[in-house]
Length: 474
Image (cartoon, rainbow, N blue to C red):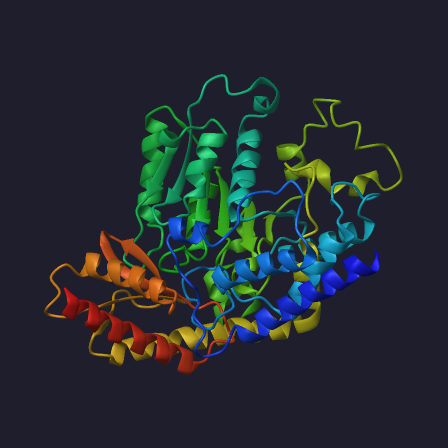
């Protein structure tokens, strides 16, 4: 690296540190919001023939930061990801600086050792004693891979011959993530062959309805093969009863997958162990560390109960020599992780989680999960005491579903949807808007343990103040 590049990099790092340090300031907005057309004018989006000077390049970085959503802001409540930790940020930088693909052991020996170690750690927490797994780009890919492995198990020739006829059918809760719909499309199963089982009032899959749906499918001559339970639904934060669902999948010899992309991190909290009763009975388990563990996006894993499942489901080395340019015979060839991955080039995401977990330990992460629950409990309690706010559903984990109410507002759903959009345009708090059983409401995702009770009080006060102003103006 020459002196010029070194100075540029140092100036860039100084900007990053300043951005992180300034984020929690009380008066900072979560986002400096503009509509698309207005924001487009803030940037020079042309790629110039002659390039930019170092000064202009840094100015471009500053512009990006000025209009980016500050996801580590203590009033960023709108998504299931956000605040990251310094050790995890170190891992992100280390991965970028070393810049390798974790496809073969010879190309990424250290990364391979660390990934295998952390996969075994996480699999053990789920209850998989002989488990396997791999890091992926997100819960969407994890759910896709689980469905792929299940499909190839029930139809062993499909990898080579393709779907000759399709009578496969699989089952998810009507509160499950939409990625299963995408997976049904990608894998040729078809969206019409995905059965959405109704949830109960607590947002959990109705197990009686699940079995009825399986029996109906069998009577129609279809081939049920896969059921996905959800541990931490996107809207309510609900946890399906894995043990009861497992009893049904065992009875009908179906693959059981647990989509714990959102809630898997609660395995680290002693107070939440019952939420995962029966997880050891699953065939596969998805877990997004970037959601609650303070890891930069993305950082996810797919875990399997048995070794060899991912290889059988994902590899094409057994039916083609097209990959022989990268996968060779050598002493450590058994550790080539790319053979059990859909990706060839795969970033070393494990470093982010590895450094953070090493730093905080199980105990530190357990404290983090408990603090998130403590903050969520506080927000729920405050909402219950405020006259103009209504808790729509009892809190289950770290999602708080509520809305503004007033006798002057006749259409609460549309009013709260407009209120959410107005709050984002104002800069904070950053909330989301959701529906359950055709009822709309605001949603807080409590994912930042650096948030404090005062941040919650300020956010709720702002919501009420802005809602009353909107009421008066309309």
